Length: 299
Image (cartoon, rainbow, N blue to C red; front, side, top):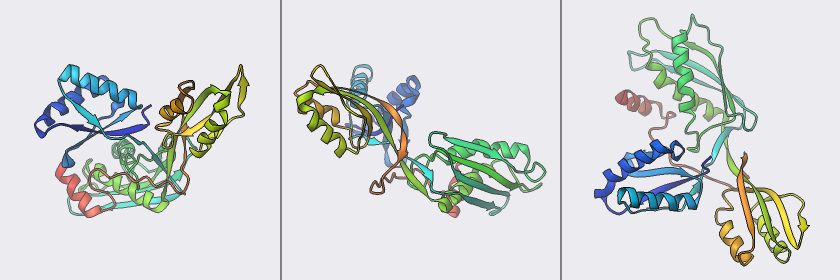
């Protein structure tokens, strides 16, 4: 599961089409790269596991495609979750012809449960086919929350909806759903979640105190250490954000005698001092007039 996102840089504007083709091919082979083009900014971002994967990608691009690329410093992939329960409402009835009225209930969910979606809307008010379109669009609408990150661990219920026998087109719900969801998130507010790594660490005993102090500074949570055969062994969890360069620092702290292994643990609520805003792609559905125009033009 990639926990970092990174921007790719290439040498010249002339290489742009080749870079696009190369990364499309690599993304087909490894969908976890989740390559994201931002054509308006001529930017390319992808998800990675860490520095080693970035080195491998650079090498593959050079050997297979003859391209030399560089990567910016990777940044952590945060998520968002609602702070409280609330409602989202949209009456998309202008400019005609269109008619889609939706009311959502949005509630915080248990950590790690993702999105739980259900509908209570009556079929005579909102046809099943339209309800199915809403269900398809809700996960897409949650890809960018109030801070620009994916929204997770929530329950979304379509409480009621309404179509019009003459004016409604199925695509009206493609336009309306993100506006209703974002209206709901504006009412509930969202808080940031950060990814944590579970770590196992073994260092010579004489470096134990120094290493444990470092872990505490990184906001690590540590189990009781064990001394075994002159080495201190330790397990716990560490935020990804504070530990990006810890493997390199551990090497210099222990003169290369430290052993570290990490795996993804889970996401948890960020402390209040963490502020991680992400630039939104596309028009924000909260700016309803501008959003309607942009989506209708795209459709």
